[in-house]
Image 1 (cartoon, rainbow, N blue to C red):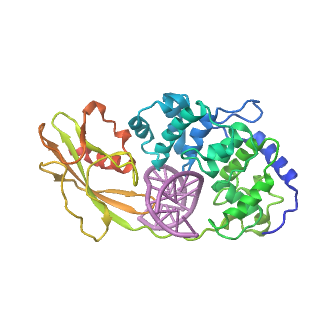
Image 2 (spheres, rainbow, N blue to C red):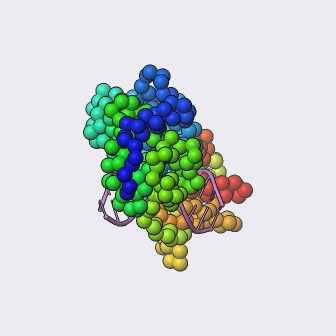
Image 3 (cartoon, protein in one colour):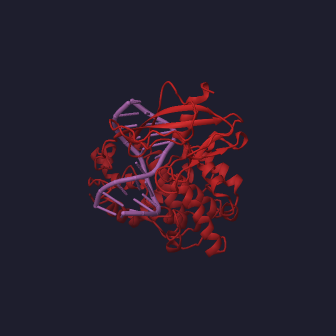
Length: 355
DNA sequence: AACGCGGGGCG
DNA sequence: CGCCCAGCGTT
């Protein structure tokens, strides 16, 4: 870490001037200078969706959620299955479960309004240190410091921090806090994140366009593209399993709602075997109903956070009175493939030529 | 402190 | 195809 030549006041003045001109236009954002605060409900919704997820992936989901449930009260009153189905495909499904929990707590304990208080926000389900600071600063213009991946990268480069993440988090947080201003902290938070997203990018940063190019230590030293350093991650093992896609003669599909916790928790899916390490044999291959199951050509390949999956898909037509050991039938007209998490939708797609 | 938890984009 | 990206909750 090397000392900066410029004082914090100069740095954030330069950044805010840049932001006033170059702020990204985003569906959940109020442009700088508009003189109004954004709706905390929309700030919260966008920030939860943006956890571990790109702006491009979030946009359509944000529009659908806020159109279908315009206020936190509307969302709190929604059916669980409707919210999970609308979230399908966005990933990290605990976020959707916590989104609903949080909406209901805001209605029950806070009169349907998000608290303008960092500690109270932090106590809500699905809101951690980053999201609490984001809502407090962006929605309420309170002086709190956001530290997301963008800010970590910007701080590591600005100060040429070589210690690897995630261990370097406290050090980077301290540096970010030093730069957070008393005036316009909300715009400042969005500005530093925009800087990381558009200029100070992970690979080939556009240092020539950066409002902090002069004080940036990593630019001077040529280390910017290599920062922040990260501790190496483990390689992902591969697992395999079988999914059973059953369709009754009246068109109803045999599906199951997965357990509330764990992988794809609370989501709809096809019944199947457990997913075991490649090389290990599958335990008791028991179809969810007795039928003439046909194994499809090809397989589904999907990568989760911590393992690769190869999924064999078996299909069958099920008699109208077939007893079922796992799952329940969902009527043809009630089934939307878009309600499925991606791996299950891939399995469904593979069957499209089979039925 | 370490681990579980998706999906998309890029080369 | 592998590699990169990256907050929250649980243990």
